[in-house]
Image (cartoon, rainbow, N blue to C red; front, side, top):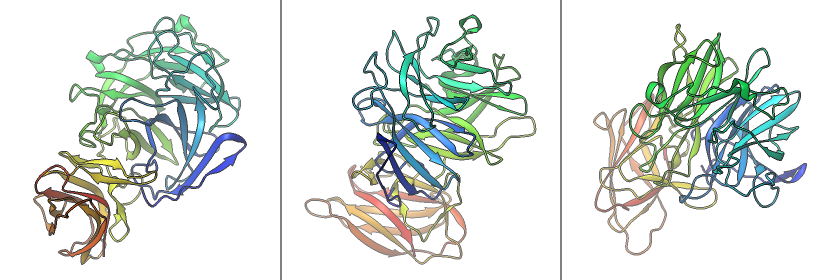
Length: 445
């Protein structure tokens, strides 16, 4: 996302880097060129929201050997704090292996922050490290005894009475109480199959929250296909259940042609609740980016499903501001979001009949023209600009001439029909091939 200016600053420790910038509440909440998935959200005693997640770095494999942390005070300005934890190389805090780091979680007790991490290791898949800061660096990683249930995706919930619960697993969810030191499970309390694939559509990625005496288990949900693209939930009046399936909170289907999974959390921040989840990019299962949407609760405690948006926790995107291509929240066809430099992303590999959707864009009292930053391919093509739905009001039917030789970026302006108010913006692409053009950003005038 090009609106973010990246600044590096070393603080306290050589491996601890701060990247700061203003994201204007837009999705994704991660800067361009950074891919944080599996977001676990917490509001710590300082009132800030902290996001702990996996760090994707390659289309060929999940995750990496590092964890970063996202921090916000207002859901408008997000800071990325790098190298909070490492399992290999500089700052290695896992002395017993050099395996990748999958989805983490974090908890705090007596001013100490505990990072629970997991790895693709059959002998020691999960562990715990500590820090006096919520953003690390976390050190002294030690393996956890999971009572023989050696799977991934740890999460930690601390109840109102101070009792901590550890949950993890794939296909069936496990839970146990934590001992007071927060480094050991009380295996005498371990219970399997609290959630199951057959009864709750549970795949993996459990997260526990509590509201008004109701416990909410949030997890990757396979209820709509063989792929766990949904964030689903189940409820109970006890941490150990039994749990009743509640439905889907958000579905990331159509965020990318290669999308496969989802993983997230819910959190209360300043009297409002939000769901955190991720979206894939690059036409692959990985390179995922954390996103946020506001949610609400019905009087019976159920959670209505929300849609993926470009605006995230903020207002609709101003039409007259620069709208970066990676803000698209729905993609149909071959088109995907792809990196085009260390701090920039684009809509790429656009084919005939592909669509990109931005929800929502505020045209206020009206606009007269559209400016595109675009790199046409050899064949060029057409872009139909519409609002609300592809068959609703068309604002423009734009022809983009092809180019000979290599693509070159151009800034082009076109007249559009007048539109006012907030709407979903649809871009529909028509032409030959699967690389008609590449789009960097757009703005209305």
